[in-house]
Length: 124
Image (tube, rainbow, N blue to C red; front, top):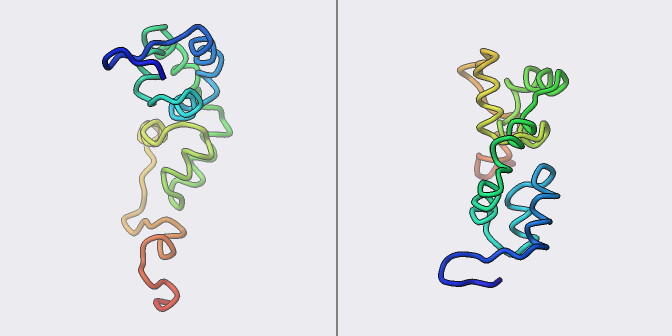
C-alpha cells in the first residue's frame, strides 16, 4: 500500500479493478483483494460515481427473491436471507417492511438453540 499521510493513492490498475468488480463483489472483498479497507474502497467508488447508480441496479428485487423473502421471513434470520438473495441485511429488512412482513412474537430462527443456548445437547 502506498500511503501519503492518511490518504491512499490509487493506481490505474486498482481503479480498473474497482470499476470492473464494483457490482459483482462486496466492498470487503474488493478491499481484501487490494489490501485496503472497505471504507477506502467505498470512498473511491463514491468519488468515481459508482455508488449511487450501481447500488440501485444491484438492489433490484426479482419475483423469485421476493417470494423467497416471504417464504423464509418467519423462520430464517435476516443474515441467512440476505446471504441467499444477495442483498445486505438493512436492504432485506427495508423490503420486508415495504411488504408489510412481520415476525410472530414467538419468533426464533430455526437453529436458535444450536446458536445461542449453551450446552445445547444437555438442554435436549
